[in-house]
Image (cartoon, rainbow, N blue to C red; front, top):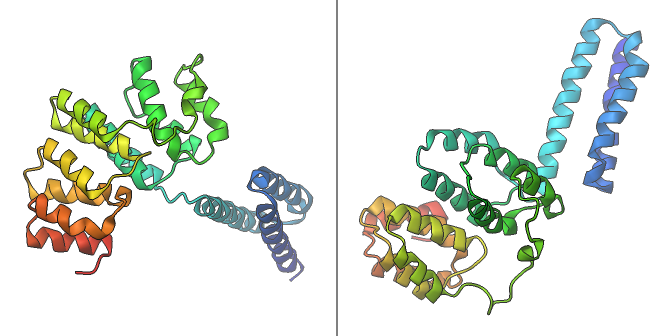
Length: 265
């Protein structure tokens, strides 16, 4: 009975410690683990092996839960393992970047997550590295840790002033984007460029129509993927039906798109 009470006291203390530390500051997460270790040092000598294993298992669950809470409070709902698994199944470099940019349109990343993702991308030249980091920067949660990524990518002399927010006038205009798309031969690379642009820019439906005309989206599945991926970056979503009409999206595909986006049919 005494052992059971002791275990319960340890667990209760752990939960209260975690709740208190997280409310104060997420940066204190490290001290949570340190406090749990102190409890172990004091109490474990008084417990048998079975009880110790039980406590360690529950402590592990507590740590996992609190990491999930911190991520959810940061607006980070990524499944990193799934993303890396999918990346490893993609052969084309262009499609790999295309895949990451699509996710970045609506999701955010921590530096730690991007650090893992970069290990599965082929970024050979400094220009490719800079292009990727500049595209992803607006979607990084903990921008204060950007040096970790720059060092990992060997961009030691990178000009950080490039990270400063640009005014609306300074952003690449749609006309410049269209000219760039015209110079790109492969459609996958065109779509990758549109998605990377969409990470930090929004579109009107009319602008998207001009862009869509530059892309070879012949199949219904291609049109569906494009509209779903870009939808969160559309300014005038009330005009979505115009996009369907001008892109010649069939009725069945429109229903699928609206259902997936949670729009009224």
